[in-house]
Length: 228
Image (cartoon, rainbow, N blue to C red; front, top):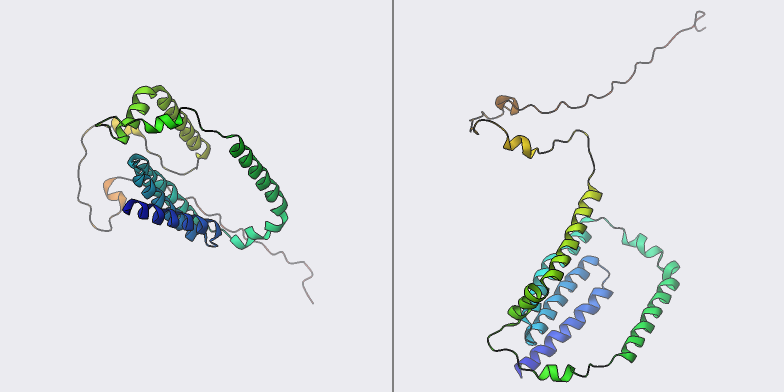
């Protein structure tokens, strides 16, 4: 009885928050409703006995993805009134794409059938003494370890590519040289620097600031005859 009431409560809040994500005018409110939807979905996973999926949903989606969306929306100065100006112009294209996706969903649902062994698999008892997290760990890190490592390499290549594409050489910036730090001779000493002495006291000189160009002086030449 308690599990059924909890299921209906979590499901109702999940549906309501999902609707608010789409219909809310403020994007910050949409992200907050999205976080609420993730928490309620995690509660449904807990009721179903999938505690590993609930934990992953809270840690990955709420702790990383949703917070990232929130920071991006709050930090970017987006003029939403300007974005809504072209809504009517692109509405027919959006309606055509939406209709195509709806037809594809109907085609998938019309041809989808349960596998013959699906009913028997649901009736199989769970192994004694093995939790869901342990069972998934055996599948990922024992049975499919090579595929898991390949996915990790793909993500690593994507991360390196993003860093390389956004790296820009800026003149005048000081960069850290690991080789010079490791190869330095002597020991690191701690010195007492008087207040307001600056970096010259310890022998560190800042790069000189670029000199500003002085305005050119305009010479006025008067004619021989002068003004009358």
